[in-house]
Image 1 (cartoon, one colour):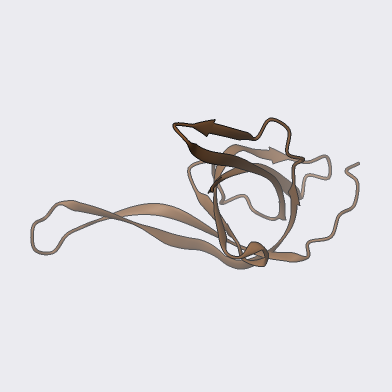
Image 2: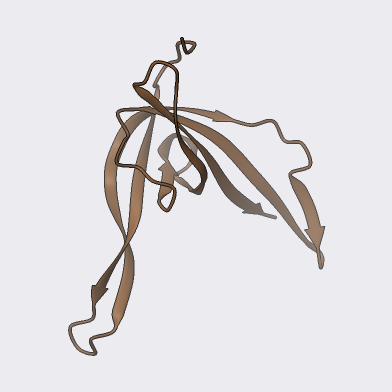
Length: 115
């Protein structure tokens, strides 16, 4: 049995869709929402070895765990916007993983912070 958790933050899940350009016929890609302002449990991972400096540019990798109920339509090639954290855009790097209760799904997210 999975430990209980609160779905207390809102997220938006988007997928990349391609549509043909009406003038030139080439494919244009845009992000389309799949789940809008959906309640989820968001938990940041502790920052261990997440910061690096290359060519004088500081970069931090932000990793987050996302748990949602009834998110069978969400796949690994989508992205997530965390509204409670300043509309932070993060990519899904792992998941979906079905939890023990067979209702909740867990994903691993990753985002970048340049400074």
